[in-house]
Every structure is written in C-alpha cells, then in structure tokens.
Amino acid sequence: MNRLSAHIGYLFSELPLLERLEAAASAGFTAIEHPSPWDVPATEMRSCLAANGLSFSQLCAVVGDASKGEKGLAALADREADFRESFNWALDYAVAVDCPFVHPMAGVPGNADAAAAAETYHRNLGYAVERTAGTNVKILIEAISEVAVPGYFMSTLEHASRVQDIFGPGNLALLLDTFHAQANGIDLVPWIGANSHRVGHIHIADHPGRHEPGTGSIDFDALLDALAEQGYEGAIGFEYIPSRTTIESAAFLPRWTQLIGAKLQQRRQDRRLA
Image (cartoon, rainbow, N blue to C red):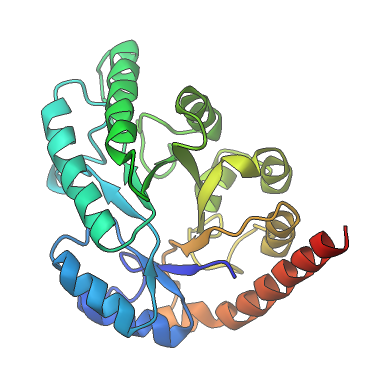
C-alpha cells in the first residue's frame, strides 16, 4: 500500500516535534516527513519512527535562512559552499533514518542572471546526484508555484521535467504537489497519465486555500484513479494547512486508506490475470 505521509511541519504543529509522530500514527498515517528535522538527532528519530510503526518519506536539504526569506540555496550562485555543506548533512541524516528522498530546494535568485542561476542549479544537482550514488537515497525536486513563493527558481512542472531529463528519472524524481499544479492550471489526471514515471513523491493539498481535501476544487477521486491506473505505489504526502484541528481535518483519511488499498489490490489482480 502507498505510504500515507503526514507532513509534520504543517500537521500536528501544536505539538513538540517527536510527539507529532505518535499523533500521526494514531490518526492513521503510515509515514511522516519534515523539511528540517535537525533538532532531533537521527538516532532518536529512528527509534521514534520504529516505536510508532512509521517511515520517513522525504526531507529537505539546504533550505537556507528562513528569517531572511530564503527558500533554498541550490540556484544561488554565491552559496555553493553552503549548499554542499548543508546537503551533506541532510544526506547523512536521510541515510540514518532510511529516508528515500532528499529535496534540495532551489531558492529565489532574485535579480540574479537567469542563465547563471540555471548553471548553478544544475551544477549543485549534479553534485547531489553524485553524492547519493551507492546509497538508497535519491534526489527529489519540486515545482513551487509563484502563488506560494514569488520568484522561486523552478515554478512549473514543465521546467522541473526539463531538469529531470538532464539527470534521468533514476537519479532524480519529481515531487508532484497538487496545490502548486492546480495553481499553475495543470489538469492533473492527464498529466499523471503522461508523466507518472517522473513522480517519486506526491503532496496533497486542495486548491484554492491549500487546505485538506474536500475544501477546494480538486477532484481527488479522479486523481486517485489516475494514480492507481498508472501503478503509482510511492508515498502520498499531506502538506496542507488544516482548516480545523489536524485531527478534524484528517477525517478523510480512513476513506482514502480504503480506496487506495482497494485500487492497488485490483491493479495487482489485473496484472496477474494479464
């Protein structure tokens, strides 16, 4: 079954970080993710994951200084040394907690030359791909819409796909975020039909509002059908802003668990009969 991953930067945020793991497991999630879990030593995080029957599905690298408005360093030409140091730290943490994906955030280059930003980004991703060789960790990249982060270096799935084609899906996977895709006018069902091979991780949030499923306009039943049809068995992460308490906002989860399980079982049965 797909791992149902609680983004504990958004969900259960009223609790201390480690207590969010128990809350997520109790709510029915089978994995967690967090962009910067560094306050919890990897050995302690690994023990807490095991105690709660959870896996760690993805984490970020090289986020930068949030107080300065930084949303990553990978495309910033004057920060390559900082990128490498931070990436190495994140990779070591990911290996220690059996996390399969590290997401080096691209950042907001501002008035920097676009060609220089692209060259820096590709060079840093090349370094990251090289460093993950021989590990069970792969690189994850995400298109973050202008609606959410104005000026983000990589704001569209088209751009992300071009970058992926440079390095290959086996080395670098896309994080498909339903909110960002919808904000950019992407029709999710046909996009998944044509591009599911690109996707390593999914983020769920409705649009508009970026709240839980059922609060906006996205047809998530059709999206789940498309994912099942394509045989997607990666993690489905819930990175939304709860419109109520986290527990109340996650009332959809039992139904999703049942639907996803049934769809995957049907697909496997169809494969056996084929």
